Length: 280
Image 1 (cartoon, rainbow, N blue to C red):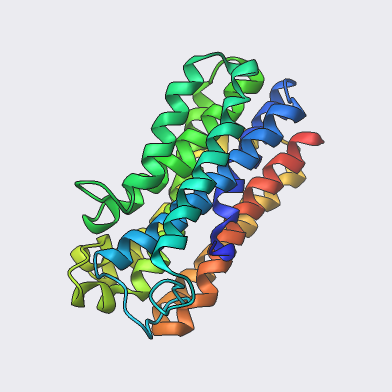
Image 2 (spheres, rainbow, N blue to C red):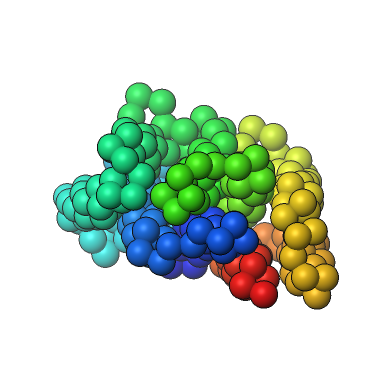
């Protein structure tokens, strides 16, 4: 399930709830269903990544990152494939319940999300193998969860929410950047063309720093509407973000693994701080 990355899917829902609280339209039931759907869809995508990267010969035993169950023989490919589609099916059933709040067009949106969960690793043009993984994260872990979670509560999406969704997506992309920064040598050796392989470590490390700064800039208008004391959250985020960026430049291999979880948790903390400030 790659538990250390799951804060990424929750952060978008939490951020959207912050916007809904600010607008006075927060609704607990659809928000909770969005959270469940987001987490299940991410787990399904993680399962699919394990299976399809294994079948394509892109994973190998003893890699620097977290242990891959199929590659290391902990789980059979067939069992992982079943787990992928079972989890995705449960996610889709959860998502269908949101039709009661958002209308039948959400079926189309849900199908798009389900295909996206698979398209990251599978299909005729797997996004993760062509340097488009970070773009996919911005869309499916930023724009989609923030805008849809807000929509099922408010019935519309504002410009501020749209900007916030891109901000969350950029923070989520940083989690993938850390992952691909660590795996760059392994990925290059098996022909997996991630953004890190294509651009090199210095460039993607610079992108990591830039993403966090731009994310905060995109949410400044929302923070201005919050009590002044709440602005410690974006300041604290930037301080921690710069510290992680500096640590990324000093580490290699498995020593980078803790930074992956820290980047994901920092993203969720930022979203939670925003939601907490909206309650004030």
